[in-house]
Length: 284
Image 1: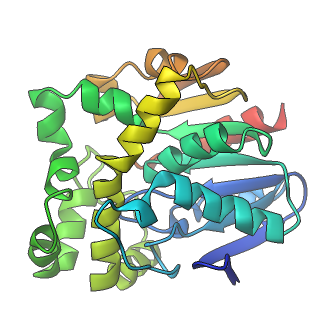
Image 2: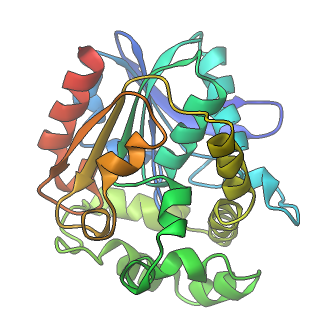
């Protein structure tokens, strides 16, 4: 289904019974990343899995020179709006990758709405940029490639989108094994020229206006107030290049979490472990 926020239309699926749980995906994917665990979570929660603006079947609005239309603040506002339209003023949130960054900003800007937050395989954006070294820049090369001025990365990726997707999503030790044929077909279908451009804008915003807002939050002493669960892959870049619990402890007041024995795409590579951690955290 699609819900109109007044600025964009957000594509989502909803199912289940119980407290509302919003699931947000990362790059370069869609809400489909949750397909292995959403049905099980729906046994105890009302699950809403949405495509972020610029991704999947959600709107891809025009950008501006400061990339504000793809800021995490506006992406978070989209989600608060659709949850309100569905009748939820308070809810749980789990976000993987880019979705975790949107959820982080949501918890700061709308603390009254986010009851608990889980982030998957990220450290805070500002912390990661400020700690950049050769190892991180090599592993996360796309952070620096995608922020180059348009249309350079768009043109390069657009020359063969499926080759790029395969390289990007198959980098981990599990390769392409976590992705079912059906899920992969959806990722390829959605990786249109419009989504390629919008996702580049997502990263350009992250390296500019989002950092400005994160610095403002740091200067103001603003922290995530709700309970926060941090999960990351033991075999991934976050484990090698970051200190997730320490990093999130700098911007949150109530943090717990652990590494799981996999890579970046936890919900698809380790669905049982990821489901169990999310269920136990949100149900407690």
